[in-house]
Amino acid sequence: MLLIRTPRPVLAAVALTVSLTACTAQAANGPAGSEAPASKTPPAKVTVVDPAAGRPVTVTVTGGTIAGVKVVDADGATLTGRTGTDGARWTSDRKAVPGSSYTVEVTSRTADGREAAPYRSSFTTPEAARVNKLTLAPGKNTTVGIAHPLSIVFDLPVTRKADVERQLKVTTSNATEGSWGWVKDYSGRDRADWRPREYWKPGTKVTLEADLNGTDSGGGWFVRDYRTGFTVGAAQVVKVDLDRRKLTLNRDGRTVRTIPVSGGTPGGDKRSWRGTAVLMAKEGTINMNSETVGLGDAYDKMVDYSMRLTWSGMYAHAAPWNAAYFGRANRSSGCIGMSDENAAAFYAAVNVGDPFEISGRETKGTVAEGNGYGAWNLSWEQWKAKSAVG
Image (cartoon, rainbow, N blue to C red):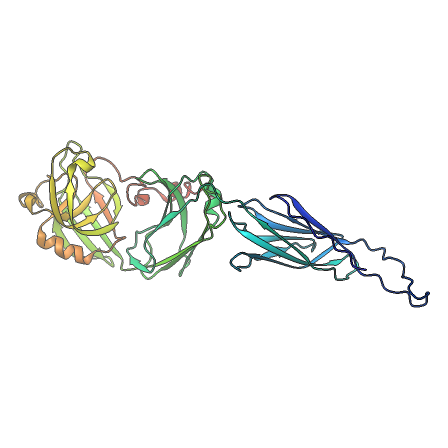
């Protein structure tokens, strides 16, 4: 006789149990209708703990072993997992997701190897009170310069940085050494960048698998995974010497263009930044207004061939109004200006992600990590120390 106790629905985090016993056989030599003595083997008891969101699903069997577990969400996706070496505990590889329903099917065997009746249950995790999202750079399937990091900006605060970082997997085509580092983006939001130890090698293919679905960031839950990938292009480095008012474009170690420029005016807030900045975007013709960067009414004009280097407003661009100073004096409001002709050729030659290595005595400081992509201004040891997991 098979006795199954159907579990009643319970709230999350309450264990569901059921006792499973094997049928007893009719005695071979006993009177008709008599039964053989009940087996001395205890029944196998299956327990499924309804997890809170952000925790794995766990199945245990007492008095037997697990033969198989199948966990399926409402969309039909299977939550895979592993059975422990003792055969009595199964844990899902991924965490349960907020606001999702799951069905669980378990097959097991009693201690003497007999197959027990299947066990079925279901549970639903609560909806997330706050959902965290993110923005990835560079864009998917793009080709970028050798200094562009893999960068993630989060919509909501990340106070559980180690938990989030462990879900971020970077793969490169040539086993590039690199590390995550956490910085405060210029917008004030939390940001994680993966920077190589040295500039990328041209042709490197980079992929990110962010298995964040069901992860609690501390400021909100992630309710999806993310995937992206990009390719590294030509080995180009832009060197800007503000003391000599000269810009040099090097490709594969060879100088391909030298341009006279004028940088930020010495002695005040109009000075340029120094250190390594990374070309963030080629923005073309844009309106530049000094009030947006805290310089009062110094300028308000349309500017051609604009190439953004920092969030704080430093660009390289055409500046025909400063023609008298190119190669002679630094008289800009902080940007790196050049003639229309040189700007057009330079704009066509550079790529997003190319490093600008800027030097000069009359500058206002080094580009910070979150002001664009300033991670290259830290030593490798300093950068690795910004990882949340070491």
